[in-house]
Amino acid sequence: MTEVQDLQSDESIRTAMQLIDRGLGDISERQLVSTSEVADLLLDVRSVLAKLDAEVHIN
Image 1 (cartoon, one colour):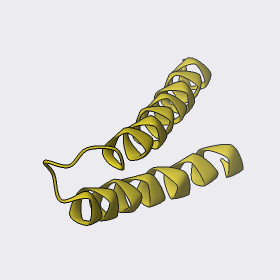
Image 2 (tube, rainbow, N blue to C red):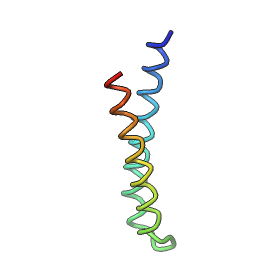
Image 3 (cartoon, rainbow, N blue to C red):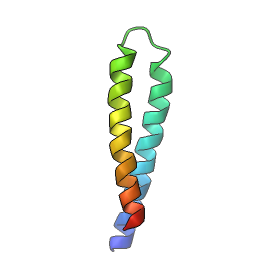
């Protein structure tokens, strides 16, 4: 049971990171949002997810 949850967690983290990476690319082309603020937020979230992803692989 735990193994299935870990695999789902792992996949969810990777999916979230892919969405954030794609969003960072899209935001840089928009002129109506403060790209630096949104990019900072997305980078912070991605950093947290990357740390969680590393912990999942260790455990």
